[in-house]
Every structure is written in structure tokens, then in C-alpha cells.
Length: 113
Image (cartoon, rainbow, N blue to C red):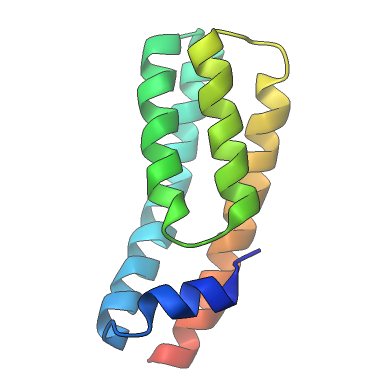
């Protein structure tokens, strides 16, 4: 769930068009990024997983969904430790929170256009 007070505080001076663009970037890219992460896990490619999990953490954090960001951080930590145990569970949570984030952003976008 988005921390709306923090989101609004951070983007209060941004033009609506920029916020819409940020939302569009997330909604158009997040599923492909999750597929890459799942493939890295499936292949036990920890080098790529570390890079892609770190990238996803950075990608998602600007939307102020603390739960989704936390799952991305957990995935990155597991990748750094090269620890498979629990990785699929964290990935499932990251996927569901990312989908919920996309829905929240899509709803918010409608208020901006």
C-alpha cells in the first residue's frame, strides 16, 4: 500500500504530467522486471539476481509502497547471501504487492488526467 502522505509530500511540486509519466513507467515495466527476477531465481543466477533485485528495489521505492520495497530488499538480501530458502515466498509477496501497487497507481493516475 502506498504511503500517500509521503508520496504526496515528495511529489507536491512535480507537474501532474511528470507523475503520470512515472506511473506509466511503472505500470508498463514492472511485470517484465518480475519475470526477469523469477528467471534469475529459477536459474540460481545469483549474480544477475543481485543486480536485478537491486535495480527493482530502486525502481519500486520511488512509489512509496513500503511493503513492496521491503520485499524487494528481502529478495536482494537473499541474493547477496545466495540463499534459496524462502526466496520463492519472498518473490510471491513481491509480485502480489507490485500488482497491488500497479492498481493503486492506475487509480491515482485517473485523478491526474
